[in-house]
Image (cartoon, rainbow, N blue to C red; front, side, top):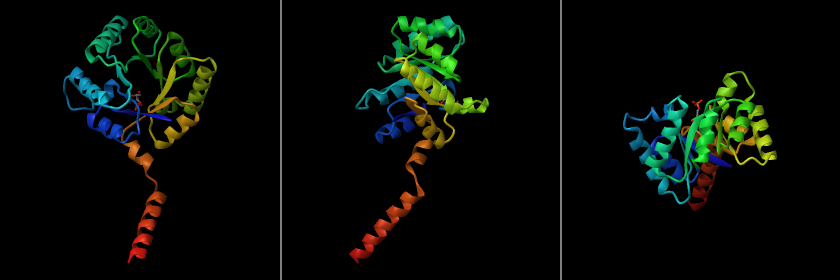
Length: 222
Ligand code: E4P
């Protein structure tokens, strides 16, 4: 199962990549705004330079920060030129006017991650518009009182049956069990907030058994 890291922190990204546990990076304006204040392009370029040194291609999603379609197209093209990174996916929020943006960017061969999707219907339209990635927000779907598992399951199985090229990324992870559920529901990728990665690796019974093995062997060595 393919896991991404939901972070714009160079150290966190480097750390996760050095352990080989993630194969992609997602950011959004709020995540970028958690970093110490700096120049947007400089920050993204520093992430790109870490990704370039990885042994395999690492997709990076960066979101436009305008609500006006023409500006979104201009920003997306500017990102492509400024970051010059083959694996760059420009995040475009889901919306009626935004489909024109996605459609236009696809004509220009820009990779698109259609983000902020909360429903099956939105995801279906995003796939039809040609989004390469569709980001469904697990925790926020649940916050709205909907059944996030069913939304993911219905979306992923429908896209697979239809032979769609769009791949589904599940974001808005609030608990490590959300990751299990999203995978069980058929997600192509789950983007994990960095603090959950070490939690996923930990289990009290693992600590117990490792302690026991070392203790037994030390006793035998005496
Ligand atoms: C996904 O690509 C988004 O960056 C993210 O997971 C949004 O989640 P939030 O609900 O934590 O803002």
